[in-house]
Length: 74
Ligand code: SF4
Image (tube, rainbow, N blue to C red; front, side):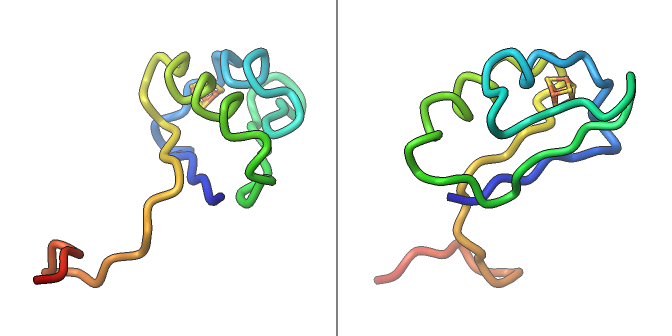
């Protein structure tokens, strides 16, 4: 799976670190580090982390869709 954290939005609350410590960690007090391609077995924890993030900075597993398309096929 793939995850992206919008670090411009992240306020380093650390909720994701508590929810998924194998994937997210705080380096120092403010710098969030994370595994951008964690194993699928971590999905439940990552989903909990995304739900817990107060600023909705975590995006999970979106397929890459070309700009200007819906990504759907007829
Ligand atoms: S829970 Fe959200 S705001 Fe807090 S450290 Fe994680 S990504 Fe950043």
